[in-house]
Image (cartoon, rainbow, N blue to C red; front, side, top):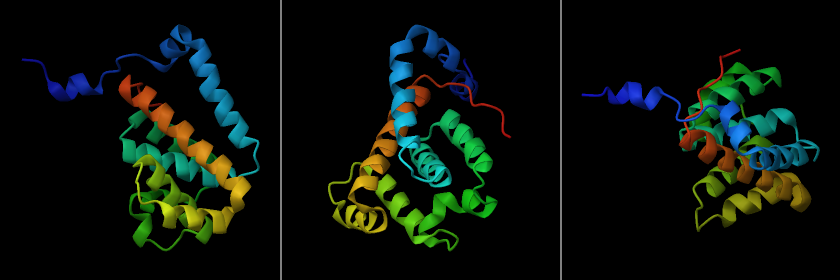
Length: 157
């Protein structure tokens, strides 16, 4: 009888193979991320958003990848540790809270997301919300690719 846990821990396809098989898809997803990165939104905030969506979606590759990048971007350990419970934790700024609420609303595709949207617009303005929304859409797409294909998580840094 196969060990289900062992089967789940094995990659269906590695990140490098995905890039080789679907280079145009890989490039498109990377280009979207680059456009968001060039928008002026803070790298640390974007990593919190990407990490939270990845936690919600259960994508091990993206959780580890964006934890590593968040550390490199200077996100405090306390914020990383408390991210799953950010609603009840104190270290997040109003801007981060607005971004995380919008992330959760879009990741869950809540029909009732007006409060989260209004909060995001108040914290970011209409133009930055467009890029924040694109960042959330992009990480959700990556979560479905990396999670669905079970990319092996990178090493922690």
